[in-house]
Length: 233
Image 1 (cartoon, helix red, strand yellow):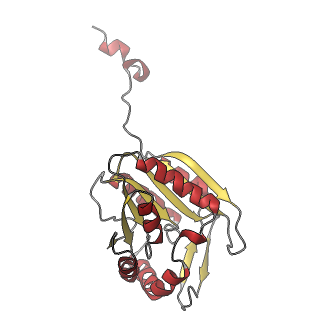
Image 2 (tube, helix red, strand yellow; image 1 turned 90 degrees about the horizontal axis):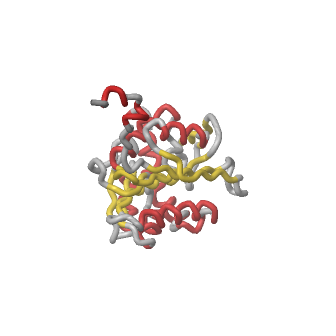
Image 3 (cartoon, helix red, strand yellow; image 1 turned 90 degrees about the vertical axis):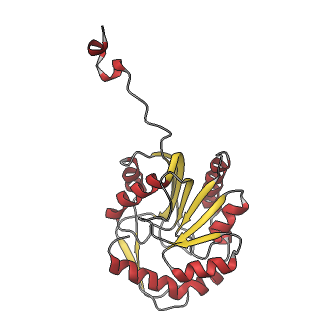
């Protein structure tokens, strides 16, 4: 995300399309099999944790939240758009949904085992990626995973109509290597990276990256730190 004006425009656009978006994409049936394989791998890892707690950030009307919940995870959906959150609560009354931003998640430090940002950074310029990475690191427990999907490439494109409404949206394209590097700078390690060719309904290659927050920072031994002589009696 960028400035308040940008957030206001983005919120208004997704408020306008919330109902038709939910009708067009009611579940994960639209996703490519390769994409679902990444989601299932993420879910498999999170099921092995004690709490299985996940934030679905940029959840929209909750289709991915439902899938992850059905996969055995404890999911909280977060979206910038109040209308998306309203539709999600109506459609999936057993799940929790809240209004929030990528860079200011409504969660305590080290509160969750996983974060899914499924096409949620597509309106975030590259300069914002370090801020997002720091926020993800803040809310993830040590060893936690974050899964992101986005349009692969460089630059941006714009659209003035989406889901049957005249709305202006700027779509940011991200280099998978750049996304991986920005998260690595915040201490994450890359577990998996997928880049696939666009399908007939897609304009750009599609990417998904699974990153992990390290379990702990290993302490340097005296020898590796070059401090043997200082520690010797």
